[in-house]
Length: 368
Ligand SMILES: *Cc1c(COP(=O)(O)O)cnc(C)c1O
Image 1: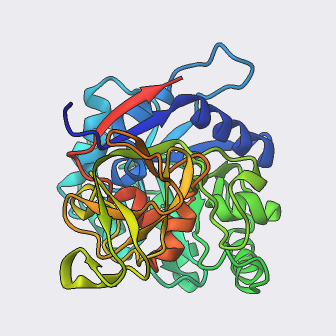
Image 2: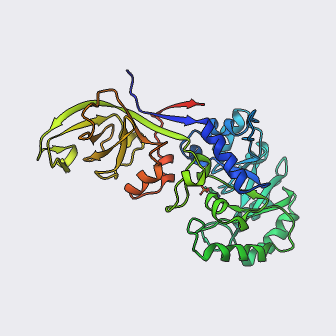
Image 3: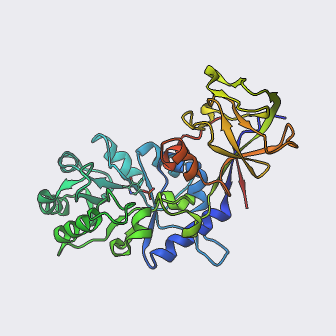
């Protein structure tokens, strides 16, 4: 048996989640966010699944992709992906504009230096652009006061292909009670009033929680992968199905007496005589090292608590409720019936981080 640590990518779940985006944002165009190796699910794999027309009732083909850098876009073009691709942070240096033009990419313009650079060069093919406005997140985007002028400059720039799209990003869309989203929305509306061009605002949380923010385009990331952007609402209750099933197997079993410890530092002391199972997965696979004792895993579909520190290639579980467990039995780390959201909460992080930390050594398979 080779190392049993694997991530299964469920195509049917992905199709379902695209359908949920359409149901929540009917008639809007979808820019599927596939940066960071498609949140750990495989950049090319997910892009290919989302660029094929579906024979089923639900259309899985999206309208564009959003990535973080030229290298990601280059890989997609390299395997023949032809649909529009947006560089979400635009270029990092002026020399990338020509590469972006050659690859037919759309670039975000979030800063005055990017406009000045575009004005000082001439690309072989004019670039489609999204002008990104900072409406309150204060991370990327033109200040409100500079937006009109930036738009005017771009609209006469010969390296830009009109129309100019208008984009912003929400800081608090996952907190339904926050006033921030409405405030950002009002600022955005105010500054784009009278400007031509499509608008694009909503991430997953806004698609699901703030329908008033849907522009002509929406930008789902997390929800495509079947994960809830809200801490107080499960993916299942939102109709989302987890795309990644992260699993391994038991590779050892041992009796541990009351008072004996398990793992590095002897950090967990067994309160009773019990059976401890060793699972072939560790932080070098992307399982969070900070997951504390008590974090659930599913052994044979049944919950068992993690015990002791997670090590590089292994972790241990208390099998006191599973006297019949055997070496080779399947262990689910997250996926159906064990949401990654729950593991993230236990480990003091967010599901985004766990998904994109899946390590290259984890074997990936597709199903459905
Ligand atoms: C990552 C990202 C998204 C997707 O956000 P989710 O919360 O995963 O839906 C959307 N827009 C921008 C600009 C992003 O960087």
